[in-house]
Figure 1 (cartoon, rainbow, N blue to C red):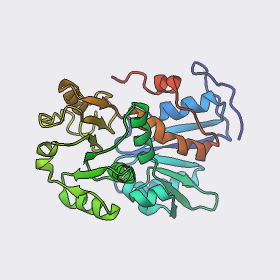
Figure 2: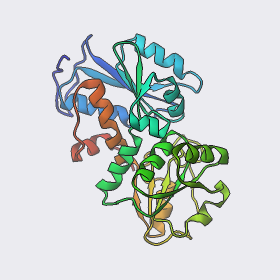
Figure 3: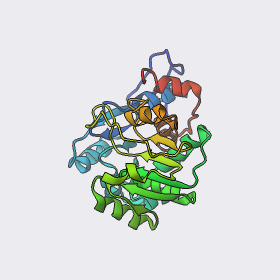
Figure 4: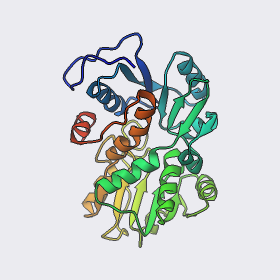
Length: 290
C-alpha cells in the first residue's frame, strides 16, 4: 500500500495509479456522507486511495458490482435500496450478515469472490452507547429493509423485546420470522402502539432529503416520557421524526453516529487500517449537516 503525501484535512490528497479504490453504492447516493468520512481517514493516515459515490439504479446492482470488481475496486458500502440484493450476490458472509439477512459492506476478495458484512447493527448499538443509551425493554422499529434487519437482530441479541411496523406487513412478518423473534403491528397502527415503549427506531427513508416523504411528522402523543427516539436517516441530521420527538420533550439520538461507527470495519478491510472515531472525524464528516 503506497502512502500519500497528505495527512491533514486541509491538504490536497495525492492519488497515484496504485491507489486502493472503494465507494458507496445506492439510489439515491448524493446525500451520502461516506465519501467525506472515508476520504478524511485516507488523508489522516496517509493512504494512497479514494472512496467515491456510485449511483446505481434498482435492478443494476449485479452489473455494477461486476464492473467495479473488474476495475480493481477493493469493495463497496451498500445503502438503500440494495442491501438485501447485495446479500444474495455475495459468495460468503460474516456472522452479522447471516444473522441480519442483508449486507451493507462488500469486500472483493483476490480470488474473485465477494464477502458480505453487515455492520449496521454494531454501528447502531455503538451510536446509542456513545449517547449513553443502553437498549432495554420494548422497542418499536419502523421498516423491514436491510437496515431494519440489522437493527432488529442487534436489539434481539441485547434481550430487547421488538415490534416491527412496515408499510408492507408481509415484509415485517418475514423479517421477524427470519430472525426468530419479535412481533408485528400494522403500519396504520404503529403510533397507537407507542405505549410502554422504551425505544423508537426509524430505519426507513422517510424524512430523508431526496428520499420521498420528507415531511414525515408522526403523532408521538402516546409515547412515554422516557422513550428514546433514534433515526437511521442522517440527512438532515435533525429529521422530521426527531424534531417531533424533541418537541414532545423526548430524548433523541440522530443517525450520524451510526454512519461513523458502521464504517470502521469496511475501511479496515479495504485500506488495511482500523480508523478512529473521534471529534475531528465527526466535525469533518458532519460539516454542513443541520
